[in-house]
Amino acid sequence: MKIKVTMQQVLEFKEVVGDFREKKLPLPGAYKLLKISNALDKDMEFYHEKFQNIIETFAKKDDDGNYVYSDDGSQIIIQEDKIDECNTALEELMGLEIEVDNLDLSIDNFGQDAEYTLEELEKFTPFMN
Image (cartoon, rainbow, N blue to C red; front, top):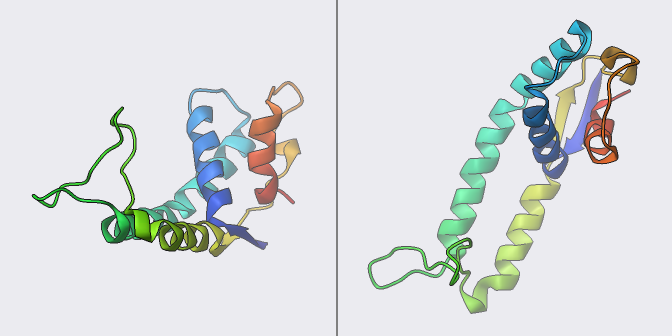
């Protein structure tokens, strides 16, 4: 069964799957998560490519063409007159719909003893039937 999810949901799913790499899961759940995660890798490549293009287009640069960072060095500064355009481009990228084969992922695949936070479960929910 194919489902549609947004790029934002893909990013959140991949984040949680990364956290689950060290958890022991029943084989059906682990297999299905791995298959979905691997299927999303091309979409993640696309995301990183487009995100980098957005940064390249809207980032503030110094005289040498290098990105200008915030005082704490954690964020790239966006050109002041391009903030709205940048936000629009990012919203479009994050809202992009992707069709994914969910392999009939369900809560039953993870066993009755599995423990999850609400945040983890919320990020898996769009991929479940």
